[in-house]
Image 1 (cartoon, rainbow over the protein chains, first blue to last red):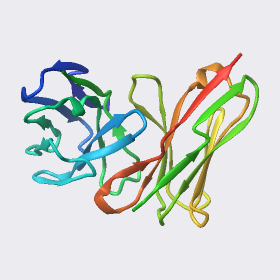
Image 2: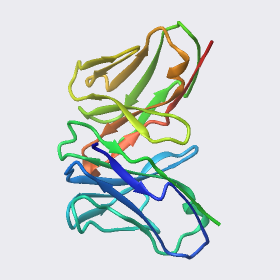
Image 3: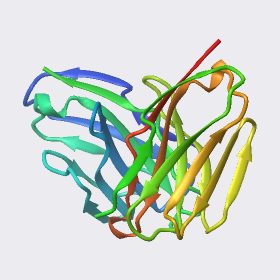
Length: 113
Length: 111
């Protein structure tokens, strides 16, 4: 089944403890991106990647890192999480050209205490 | 900066009624997407609209795109309770390769 898989689905962590949210897609998509969703602020892009080793900042990149060493994986790294990073995170992927739309992962609900 | 405005933000409907959700965007784009989101769930792709005049229908939902007016509509026909969800439009503005989302329309269909 074609899908974007995120792990974990739920995570509660403490301030300052490094964490990684994984994202993997099995559709051979070149493009991958991370979004966060917050009440009243909607969905905002964090980082995106056009292909392996090509990444760039979105609208809200502060406090996050990404890497794209393989085409299928695009992990989101929080080196020192803070409470304001408590959010619902989505990974998305698409073929370049975006003519078939974007496929979203199931989401990761992160709580930083 | 691309802005996407949806209205209404909240919509309470009776079953069997028709209604339209509007999505306006601020800069030229010919790629617009509609998504559905149930509470706490992911975004499910409903429609991909890629050209002026595009119209797509799936069940009780029909979406259209007017790129000259920078307007897309999502029309709901004879609403049923199962359509209750939040509906987002999103525009691919081309730069930064990102989707810019509207704030979403929370649709509640009452018996």
